[in-house]
Image (cartoon, rainbow, N blue to C red; front, side, top):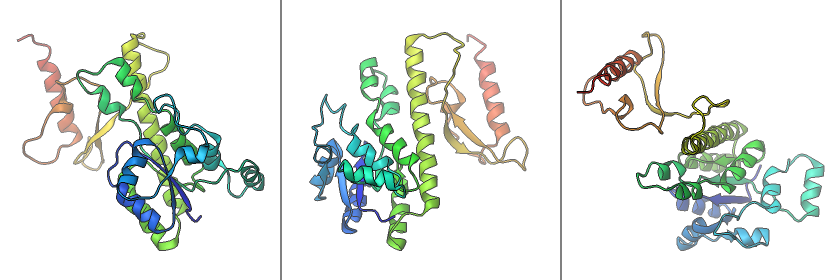
Length: 268
């Protein structure tokens, strides 16, 4: 589908000005919020403020901006469903054809040594995940970008055909749900630790990030990758720096971890 309106709201503004300028050159209306809108306007990009769309001001120190039917109706409407389109017209809701959102930096916040619980909580994004999940659910009609590395892929497809392919839309959707699951798992792990919940809870949600691809797995014909739990404290093999030698294999990591664990059994 032709992209006429894009909603952009990002904490990580890497490449966003260039991306938005490119969309504007294609005649796409840019809807934006808060700091993102300011950054785009300062760079000379014409923007429609979110309050102009919702008819309601941003409030509660920015906690409430995008949680509105004129945003989520525009994201979730099924474009080949006549009843949905009729409802949009009746409620004067314009469709939103592209979403570009990344979330408050919760991970970066909790990794600061001096962070307080209230600071961590203020960096729990509410509107961002809601918009991402809405667009990702409706990926057949609304491409959604969470990673600046995907800007060029989307622009290239729009340049080529005027729209984003269904294959790319589906991949972007899957990427969003992986990201929001990771985001929520970090929040859950952090808050459960702070709350001192029982050691063996009914539900466990952990999340890991790729450290590196490994040369091979337990055996040479197997592939493998190495993941780390970012909540762990320093002093583990995940904090090691490889100084030389070949790329590591699964067995190398396992052996190094076992050696470090053995060392930790001694007090001197």
